[in-house]
Length: 390
Ligand code: APR
Ligand code: PHB
Image 1 (cartoon, rainbow, N blue to C red):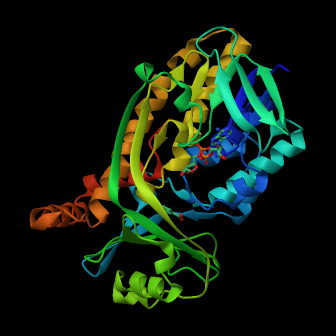
Image 2 (cartoon, rainbow, N blue to C red; image 1 turned 90 degrees about the vertical axis):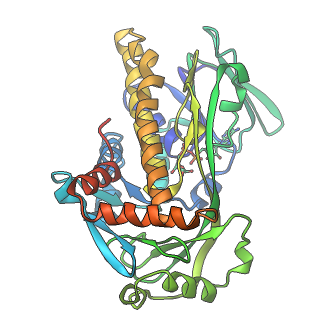
């Protein structure tokens, strides 16, 4: 079998790249190790930058997002018992974010791909990229006991942090940068109205909390928990009590409790692999970088990677120029590292660190005190939150 681009991974990065390639007639196959149902069962963040919204529109999958998504002009930071609104729209000259769950993005992309008839293989086992340092790469995988080979021009490793693509690169050819945080996020989803019409990020002596949402009747909440915490140790009641304890009292009273329909703990890490290209293998999305969810950048970085990679591949096929794919890694990493910095800053500013000490607490307090007194600091926060230019 042969195609122009093999995409490993059917998450947002792989599906978005696949749709853009299909729309301009570049043949591609997606190989995904999980089932469709498993991919769609994942609960992830839900704040889209305008660049991501624009890419979903360009891919032809924006209709439901515009119907059901929630445009947000700002968000609050709760600190010292008070809430401070970050007016994104004013501070960025009219930009905003779209609150729309990643699960919905993935579903919209999957449905569009099925409509186009583009090839995807789910439950593809033992997917392996081969000879990507040469001119004739290929990918093998096993399905129903048979080993298959797909010859191609390029391989897009969109297989996430735990995928095979990055791990197929010789250690001597790749540099890894990582910071693991000493806490995780315990998150729940409940069919209850949100605590407010915008998100609330809370810095509290008991730890970080976040009030988010998926719609006007479905809420998403998080509390910071120590590393090693077990989700089974958290009843719904204990969660709601801890969340409200970390919010200003007026906000806590706005929290509608109810049974959780999803409850899980996610670890927090910052991670970057450099470069993001190895001959005819490109890494995109979580395969190349991870951010703590504090800045809501994970999905949005996957989108900007795909912007650069798709433009480069289209230029290669349509204009017979390799300039775009040669520039991919440098362009993507320049934006990745700025988002890593912002996500690291948001995480350090809003969370309680076990080894913070009295000095660390005073610095964190001064950081937030300065933020709310400085138009320049608020503008920095706002322009990073809505997304820096591509
Ligand atoms: N072979 C085939 N598929 C694989 C393999 C493999 N060896 N390893 C992983 N995959 C699949 C996973 O099952 C998953 O469906 O690759 C896909 C990667 O998707 P994501 O992890 O969602 O990564 P990405 O598409 O880059 O999207 C990034 O997703 O995880 C969130 O927070 C993250 O918001 C960010 C977004
Ligand atoms: C979410 O709604 O899941 C969410 C929102 C904002 C974040 C992280 C997660 O920073």
